[in-house]
Length: 305
Image (cartoon, rainbow, N blue to C red):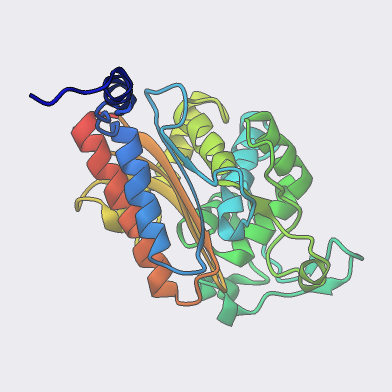
């Protein structure tokens, strides 16, 4: 019979006590975060900011670099649209009023004039109307659904970039900067750019969904405008066909974004914002955003939130 010394017995008992307990399986949120981070890591050099929140939840479910600042590109047009509808609510403007369309704008640096190039605009057809009258409604629809830069600068002249910025801040987008219109070359050279974070854009979309960005009628109209988005190759591409998505994309060289309210057929709506930079190939960035959307949707379907 083998006898152990008291010291050996104590050592064995101590080792048994030191064995860690079995690890609990990861929570659904941890699993989602891990899957999304793994997908981001597959694109070397990519900088990606993500914010996901079910509208029924009081706080975010997924936030990856959600407070990192990105060039806003065309996503800042959400803030401009909100200001426009607030001005309509206040009687300052009417969607049916006509304005003469011009292609000349003043740089925020020194007031010098600049014009937009139709070849750099996603909606070149609007330039045929320069010198003629168009309605504010048409400008607003083109600004969001076709991401028209000419329409955007025209709307900004009506509502003011500073006012759109201030309103966005009151709605919880505390770090967004809406400084200027599109293609202000002098401002760009001096680093005076429109910027945002994923959390900022989510705050604006939540305010629109919850009827806080303007009157309930104004917010319903904004949701309808966003539902008519014509560029649907990012967040919507990761969803089942026919899923309703109220969203706004943004794109410049090396930058691709999408910010959305998603309305699943069999689950409560949720907000998802994916901002990217540092990805030279547009299709690579597009596939990344669509895959993140697919992962989030699968999480929602499995867990209900």
